[in-house]
Length: 124
Image (tube, rainbow, N blue to C red; front, side, top):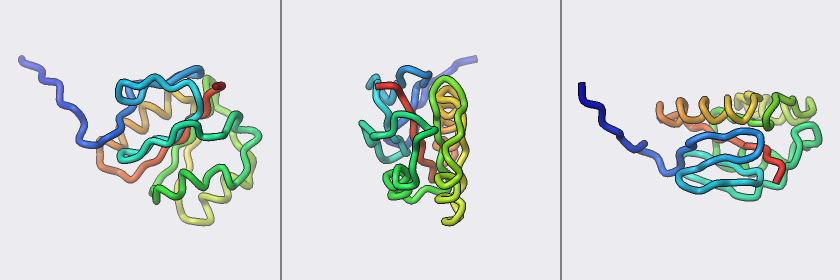
C-alpha cells in the first residue's frame, strides 16, 4: 500500500502544542496565540485562563467562528463564568481543554472545513 502526504487545504495548520510551545505550519510559537484555518494572531495577550475577562475573546470572535477552542496550557483550567457566557450569549460553542487536546481537535475540525478558531495560552 502506498501512502501519500497531502497538505491541508487551509492556510494555518497546527502540527502540535503543549504547555510551553506550539508549532503552526513551520513556526514555533512561545507566546499565547490564536489560530483559525485562514488566520494567525500572534502574541495574544492572555497569560492565564483563570484571569481572562470577556474582552479577551474579542480577537477570537472577530474571526466569526462557529466554535471556539481554548487551550489552557499543560492542564485544563476553566476561565471565569463571564468568559464562558460571552460565547453562549452569541450562540457560539466554547470548549476548554489542554493545549495538546485543543491542537488535535483543531486539526480535525479545520480538516472538516469547520469555522473553528482556537486560542492557546502559553507562558511566554
